[in-house]
Length: 270
Image 1: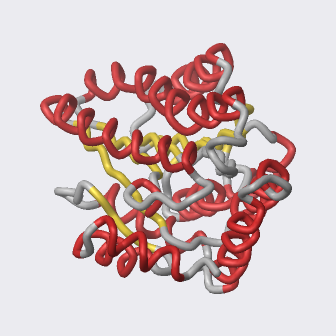
Image 2: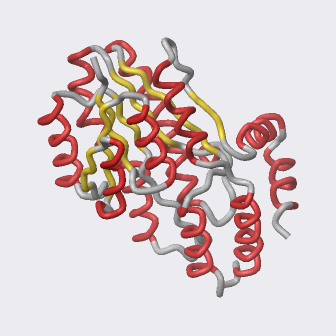
């Protein structure tokens, strides 16, 4: 039987690439995002676009209800929607911080709440949470983004052991450098927030580093293939790592002390 997949953040980047790749591999795919106009081309692949504002509970409920009404189940949920907003913690308004957590954490949790009853009933389900290398490594100017991704890591670990008894797998994807408009938007946002403050010099150095990383970033299809690998594994790993510098960065973070890692990290930001 064809499995039904709901992919959030399907208007660009990893979400879009994953929606297309999964549709090409025979899955019934619904692509959800706030910018419905950006998803019209997905129809060419047999993907059904759905408008989703992940910080609106009414919109989240309506999105899941539509899929359930049309197919009877959400077999696979891929939480790819996300926001990368940057700036020094001292400079970022708390309202902007809350918005980032609403999108990257609470919106993800609400979608999971809504699909789990059906997955439990069928004793089958795959919940894929897109974290980041930034869910293990915190860079300056990214305190709220990293807080949200560290939280996704913890949420996924707790959830995995709650729902495995019902035949539901929870899989974390940790991308490194991946081509995405989010990187450019985030860098611009950082300069807007902190470019003209006492943190301006550091912001400029980090922006330069991001520009360099963007040139070497992998295509989102690399992450899409990683997601499919996890979904189709009989016994999926808890985490899959891919993208530019992902594995080396996580290895270095694991073996170095906090102070040595900080020293290495900051040496790259001059």
